[in-house]
Image 1 (tube, rainbow, N blue to C red):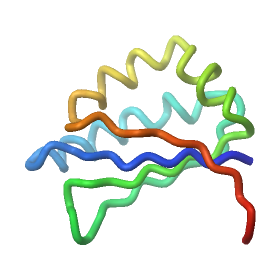
Image 2 (cartoon, one colour):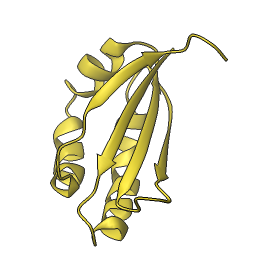
Image 3 (spheres, helix red, strand yellow):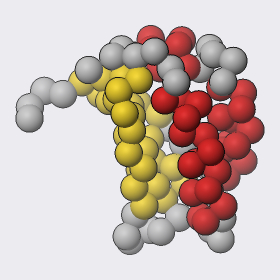
Length: 97
């Protein structure tokens, strides 16, 4: 299993709109083969920052399967305008549980 990690810096004042848009966008990623689940958390100390964790069968499931899908343009349309700056996305493999 691969875990995608992204800190999402949402423009201040746009948090409620972002959360509503994310609720609309979630089914787009969830429909991707190799998707294993996700969580979205909001920072207590920095309430305009969100932590997105997504579980994938492989990096390719994310980068090719989802980002190469017909659903990804809608994901971008719903969410990308909220970010300032644009988030860094990294993939992790568990080494200790």
